[in-house]
Length: 257
Image (tube, rainbow, N blue to C red; front, side, top):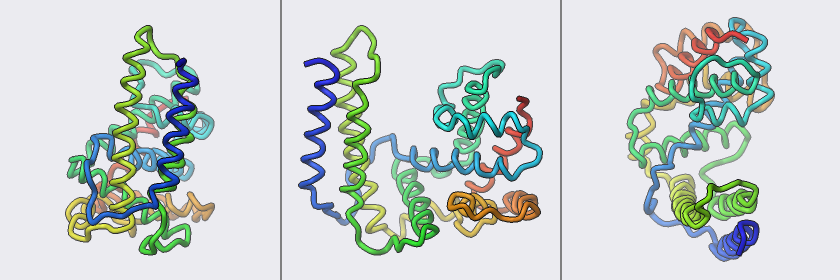
């Protein structure tokens, strides 16, 4: 079986599993992989790009790099450092700086805490989009289907010479992703109020002005330019997520492109 056949076989297996899952909701999340928190990191990086459009101190070249290469921003953790010359390198360097700002402000930082932080932001986005996150929905099935689409694309990757090791790594990743999707579905559709307070009260406040600017921009509600500066100032006393956003803007303003 080659890589393409493997990807399609596991993808179809996942599709059948998703179709038969019925989005079963348990009383509490099961095993929570260390990968928990990636959703909030990606959303945070996108929020940084949105806010950069408001900031007059961020150079036009940096803004263009951010909007032209969003995948590079998301993969900023891979940036090895050094002078960023190309537009892609600027996007990587920017993503790295912003991700580091979030890392410094992410408290608590356990896998369970990151899971509930993911859920708190997902529910805020749902409400902003006009959805009611408290209504039961087949969230688990949706996440499973999206995962199948991602896995079908894995055959385009070029593994190293150790194909067996690559396949074993894919299986491990598959298991972790399955457990993470299940945990997210449970925590999203039936959140533990005490856990939400414990893990997200200090980290994420949907009412923070800087977060509201980012959420509005996300759904094409562009606020007046004069609202940006007061929002940044307010972030100093806001949630950890807001403080990380403000710190990220400082980093982007220092970049030259």
